[in-house]
Image (cartoon, rainbow, N blue to C red; front, side, top):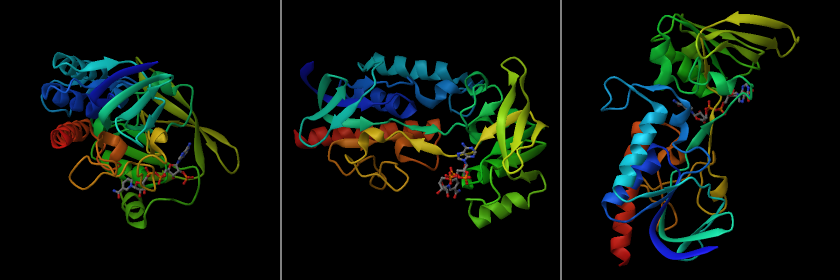
Length: 312
Ligand code: NDP
């Protein structure tokens, strides 16, 4: 099915970046179309309390905040669809965006498909995410004051999260599946020399014990060399095993960096394709915050509006 309308802008993704772009594009009267994807609202919908987004002094639940973003975008004329984009074609104008057999045409496209934290693949992850398991120390560290927590991973993310978490926790234990660390020497040494951090090597997490009501109480570990199983008591598990940008759709279509993130021109949301913009975690492997994603979504909408003015 082809919708013959040539839209001003199609936004792919519906986290803080995409929905902020939709608010700004809506207010600029661009009547944006938002394809929300498989996880409407993005990563914030798998968190619980958000305490660091300005304007919510008493905190707000992640899913509720994303509903508010969506309501605000719709108020200004954005149309949001729970559809997952399966293909794009930016080889000629108007650009084409596909949802299965459905084809949509647009003069500009804003990509805000985000990134996904890597998971260990444990069956309890779904239940305990936000209730003792976290993928973001900056977001959730504050909830673990004086607690014993673990950080899994051996790269810079794990080292950085562990060091950051010592501001709150009683003890942080880094758990890594090998003896060799991917982390840079400086970040590894900083963690190793911190008296509040212990490091356990050759251990993988077999299961996480807890409930939504009580939070996490312990983890089951397996020695990756001897196979021996042990129990370790802790009240929080932070995943520091990296993120994957959601860019499979754009591989070979748009310029990506070595880690698969979309490359944007400095201080802008411009990609290498005129009229295609990127914002949020899909182009940011550094800050990864709702507020920075929202800021870059605003930039993308302003960049799209300017582009449309220029081609008119
Ligand atoms: P990395 O890919 O560098 O490291 C991921 C770590 O997680 C590895 O130690 C890996 O183990 C481990 N891991 C992955 N999957 C699993 C699994 N299923 N079970 C157990 N362990 C697992 O990701 P990072 O996010 O740490 O870093 C990404 C990039 O960002 C890097 O270039 C890094 O330097 C950069 N970065 C820089 C920072 C800074 O400078 N401030 C801060 C954070 C990141 P294994 O080693 O066995 O593969």
